Amino acid sequence: MQAPVHELEIIEEDGVETIRIIAKMPLVKGMSDLSLETTANTLKLTDKKERYKLEITLPKPVVHDKTKATFRKKKKELVVTTYPVGGGIEGVKPPSPLLRARDSMEDIKPLALDTPPVPPPKTSNNKKKNKKKGKGGGGGGNQTAPITPEPLSGDNASENFKIDGNRLLAEGHLDEAVAAYTSAINLDGANAVYYANRSSAYIKQESFSLAIKDADMAIAINPNYVKGYYRRGTAHLASGSPKDALPDFEEALRRCPNSKEAKMHVKACLDIMNRGEDDDEDDDDKPEN
Image (tube, rainbow, N blue to C red; front, side):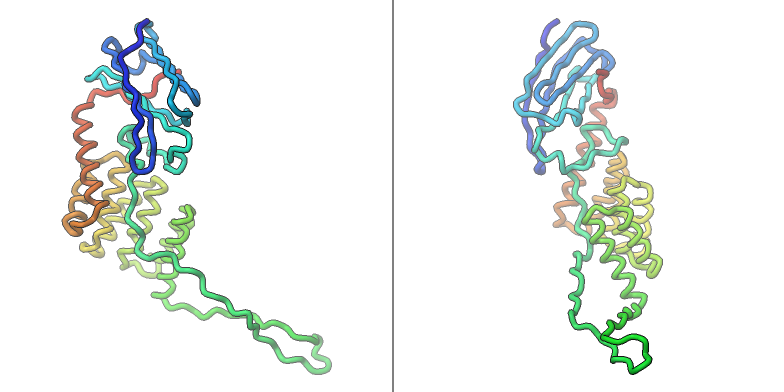
């Protein structure tokens, strides 16, 4: 068996470091012909038909269970991507299983929520005390009176639920954030922001169809609300539909020409669509161990 022609490169993009290995194997038909094993320090590739064999000592220890592999049939090459320990992958959410490894768009960052988290109000140490009871009152000494919160109006209550949702979402409590935004919507169903924020929470849950429905509602309520288009485009892209996502990001960019996020996502959609045309016959399954 011969070692295939290969190259290794270390890439850093958006704070995430990757090690990419590309091996040319003109005699291989697809992933079913290959076996790939990775440890923290080595990568071993074997052709089951005993034509190629490659064993590489990696330049850095890697998170071996996050290794991804794609065989490009047209180019007759295997692309292996793995992530060094401490290279930023620990903080990246894994891609949706509906997305191909190289199109996972893990680095996409949604626009900031509309209202920053508000610190809780300061509580006073002064306690309201009852007067001492007379003889036969059955209870001497000072007692603390219960504090009854003031009732909130509908508008204030819905805004408080939104603020709670923003805080919970930032802390990663996705179910609770969805519940808070839902409570805000139940009190004020004509507020596009509430739907867009819940859409963001659904995207993080990978509930993409629900995210798209909420973004649709936000746009229907306020067609000028840019984040409605951005949320819907993000949900389409994360679910593996760059063609559906592109018009939303283009509309967001048209309405907000200086948006770096919109520009980045328009480019990402076009890149993925172009790669899809080049690699229609690619086999993206992992090799058998």
